Length: 224
Image (cartoon, rainbow, N blue to C red; front, side):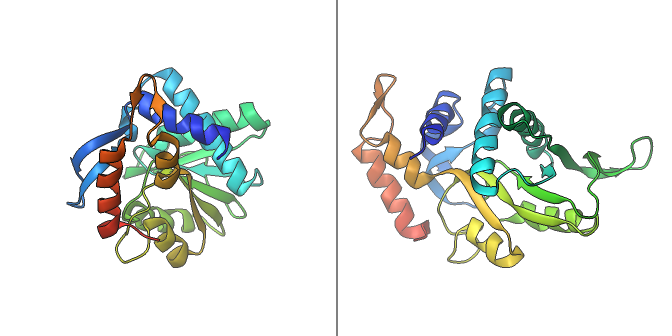
């Protein structure tokens, strides 16, 4: 596993973004783990988060693209901080763009904020996590409406590796439906590999009991 992935897993734990216990998800599923990107709240955390996203995007999609699109609302700071990090790490100017939940009819009018998307642009979509693909259903037509645009892919922070609407993962469903790759900085398999029965900051984050609960969850909701 790449060093930045190991660091990112620990960063999620340190930032209280990735939690373990008993959680009821929006879908109604009872999950032994939960990720909330809204817990990234400090300048340092956002700076580091942008760097991890930039490294993962560079690894998976290279740097031959023009725009980072972050769906409102959580995608807005993600696209901004990652565009900054991409410039600092790779010397590449990437523009950011996001949508508004409500179209603005005065001043800087329209449905978009940030850079306009135009014919010929190559776009990477950036989100925190996806379990159903609902936000892409809303985002895809907005981007397509801007012109002849190529969407290279979607980058999320964590692949939960569980079923979406059908028997595939949400990321696989997105790839199949829309024809572009959907990737994550890390997968839950990598999280488990890095934390299971290993001491971190004086604690074992995933012990055998928690690992057993995660295994049981994946027997019901997991994908191969």
